[in-house]
Structures are given as C-alpha cells and as structure tokens.
Image (cartoon, rainbow, N blue to C red):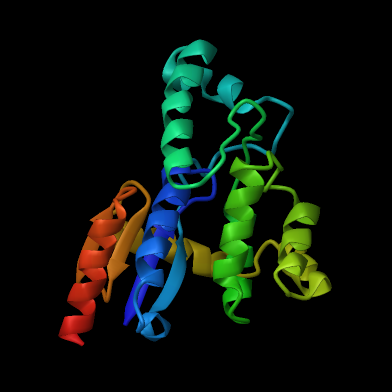
Length: 211
C-alpha cells in the first residue's frame, strides 16, 4: 500500500500535516505494510539563497507588512504547538529547497528518507537553520546514518536527482495539486492540507479494507 506525500520543507502546514499523519499511522499494527514516499514540491522555486533577511522581512511584500506577517504566523505557531511542534518564525531563515528535495531522493535509496525529512523540517522550523546550505544538509544526512561524503557528492553535483525532483513536481500538476501538503493514497484518494489525525485514520482504514 503506497502513500505519497507532496510537501515542501519551508511549508509550515506540511510539517504539521506530517505529524498528524504519522500519529495516525503509528496506531496501525499493519503500519509496516505502508510504503510512505516523500514527493517534491516547491512553494517558490525562485527563492534565492539565504541572505540574512529574516522570514517576516521576506514575506512582508506577500502579506503587506512585517507586522501582518508576524500576526499570521502567530496563529500558525499556536497550531503547531497543538501537534507538539515548536516554530520560531522570528529567527527562521528563508531558503530554496531544491537541494533538500534532491537529497531526500538519495536518502530514499537507503531507507532514510523519512528520518531525513523530519530532520530537515526540524532544522528549518524549530532550530532556525539554513536548509539551503550544503554543509548543513550533509550534516543532517550524516545524523540519520547516511554517508556524509556521498551526501556532499550529491549536493555538489547539481544534476544529481534533479530529474527525480522535477518529475515529482510535474506529477503534482497531473494530480491537480496546487498546494501542499497533499497525501495520495494508492493513487486513488487525495487528502489536502494539514488534516486532523482522524481524517488520516479513516483514509488508512479504507486502504486496509480494500487491500
């Protein structure tokens, strides 16, 4: 049974939705039968490398002002707390996530994609680290048991796994996924957004019954 999760590592609702999904999955004795794959999506492919500008400054144009950004993110921070997550938007570093997505493709070959996804989300939202930085990504890869040198080789070769990431982004369009997170169950059902645990539980139960 296959579950594909389209998400981006700078998307707060992706991290919140991932936590709810994992909470639901953990309750199933059959959880080992589910193949969970993290699929690539970029909210803003044109995001430049981190330049010292903080999150609120970078989002000021989109939301109208720094203060408006802070108001909106305060609500998301509270929602994250309900899922046991700690977000720090005041010190968060905007980043381009293409390299992070490429590294996840590499990690999947070693069964470490779930662990690395968690590390990247945590690095960005909780620890205010620059997840566009090659050295940090390699360090996170090493932290979940991957070979750091191999991870660096992947990150330094900008074509490595790039086509895999681009394929995911193209598939999202085919599924008419325009926002993330998006959870696709056996390519039959789609759940969009940071759904509550019960919604994921129902979807998983449906898959098990059909299987």
